[in-house]
Length: 339
Image (tube, one colour):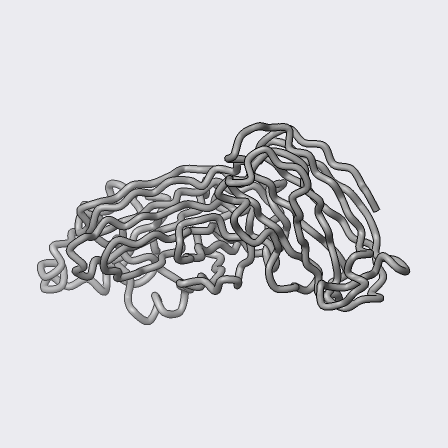
């Protein structure tokens, strides 16, 4: 037995309600089915023989009982086409992200299902679904910037189905980051993200704290192509000065560097004159970490207001080329080029 998800239009072949040859009295009794009564209303529910089913159907969705899980919640959101890059192979920071916190102090294994559903209201969209969606699951619960650094705890496969389901069995109190992803995103999509769990949990959208943005273009050329800190010429790299106009110790600054893909690039931040040197974020290494091909980010959270020098560099010296720096901050800022 199958059901058309549109709740009307049924199979017209063998074992349909209009098939007068296949239905025997014994079979109708065994299945508690009356073809004559079924002809009176088209609710999209029908029987079909197995050979025809295998021949005509590419996929089906199997019903299951949500009340198997004691706890559930969902978010309904829209992901516009202008948010984030078309391809999220290098940067997923603009993808919709959620923090999932499992509350399971007993340490007994608990099933957790994560279901992403894209809203479809048009038959043609359903029949010719060209939107490939998935959910990546990362450990930690914080915003994720690179798709594979760190590697996903559950690596989602993009499929052109209205539904994507990720199953986990977890023990203890844990935090995860759920990232909605789409292959070659060109259209705005509306979706529901639902979590079913046998243990208590909380699910919250990770809010973008950045309210101010500025962008600068520059280049490494001649002596300013100084390379990383392993080389004495590192001091000659371009320098951009950012002033965070805030006396708070809980500011956020994100710096993105885009450069030729063949170059390994990185970012370093140096405090020049800050208001709260003891701010939590200022106690950490203010670099983008390992050098990466063509793209990297420097995320500075809970830092003091004040003045910072931002230094973009290639790993090797004498690598000339143009680059783009994008600055995003939670407070008003000014950005100027020093060199």
